[in-house]
Length: 230
Image 1: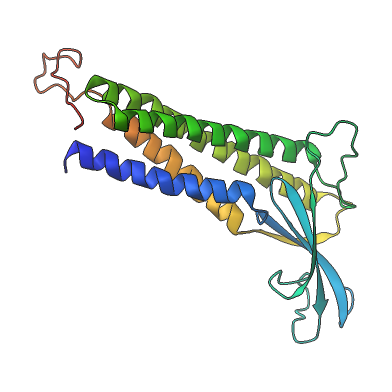
Image 2: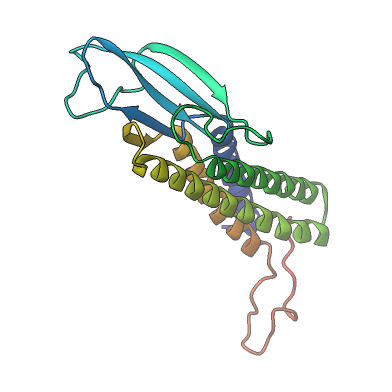
């Protein structure tokens, strides 16, 4: 396969990774929490949240949907929903955005790191655009920082995922928690996909933009004839 074709495939996959990561950042289905169902034929309160806001859903649990030992839900059942934005950067606010013990510091960290991931994606995209409009050495040169920026974006996505995972774990393990069940939603899956694609394809793009390997044992990379990406 020609080097130019490999670079085009890597850039296409990076676009998919960026779309997944952007979807994860702007949606609020990273984690779904369910409390214990006390009585049948009454409304219970489940919740799902992301980096920026929490949504509570009031679900009517009938005998048809009741499963002993399980929590309120599933979240896909119909019900009234009320969403509230986290006040991440407002000084003096109570750390409890809702009545459940949420670790505000974790959410601030996850949201801030996700912004760094988006910033690296923008920088990488600008480098790719510059390489598309450039010719010769300029094109090859700009692909190197583009690969590094996308790899850094993937690393930031991974750190944000881990911080969010620790936030949910700490909330569930708290002695004062009302939640008995939790699972990670499709926004979390999008972030995982974005991390894998951005990191791996960023590294691949970096290697593809490097000079070709020497053909002879006594030939160094600096001496090798540069391979232009047309």
